[in-house]
Length: 245
Ligand SMILES: [Zn+2]
Ligand SMILES: [Zn+2]
Image 1 (cartoon, rainbow, N blue to C red):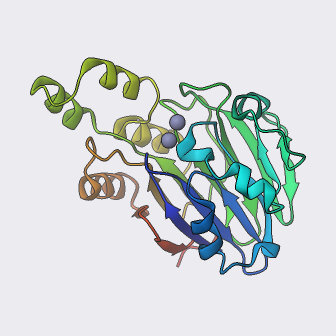
Image 2 (cartoon, rainbow, N blue to C red):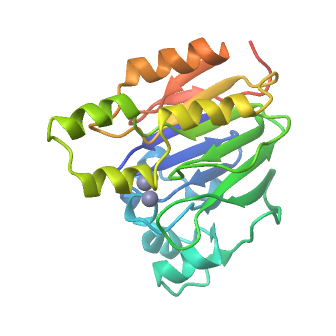
Image 3 (cartoon, protein in one colour):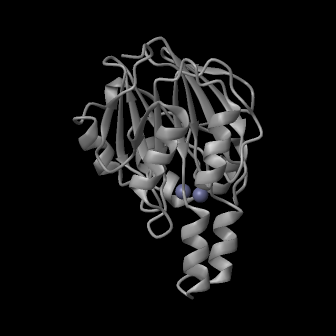
């Protein structure tokens, strides 16, 4: 299973899980043209797209994707907030598993400043259980038997505090970030709350432009977990297989 990051962060989010025969799209927050390029213009292999919430950095290609015939799945609240009418938009429900090709997907609620944000637990024979969680300041669940984790690590408390006290960051923005995005500390707590025994890869996504430090994030999560840790970036491609090497 190949994971490709078309882009990540506030500029836009879109990731592809490609089994070789099928592609599941995670998020539609980039120009649809970039998604088509990443798919080598072969949309026929796409079995669906799942979207976490309505913010444009996760949803701006929904209209174009729907017009291209891609079926899109998200929470009823998100679909309502997007306000596009298309028979390609399908509501899915928290804790109710649904199936797209060989992918089994279970949505769960997360905490973000929008209508009804979801994270997704994705299962496929090639990559096992993949946890996908972004744009959430907290996660109240733990997940059994994880094999791969794609998780937001948006900001670091120290960097943000420094910038706030030096006047480079205003209070409104700081408070908004803290009540909507996942800090490195919370990300580490989330990882440690789960059984990581069978985890092969941890992919950190949606790092903030100004309040993160890629090398520090990677090292800290690597030191803590002893796992393969990747920091997502534009066009990064990694093997998200189930069996550790
Ligand atoms: Zn976002
Ligand atoms: Zn958001």
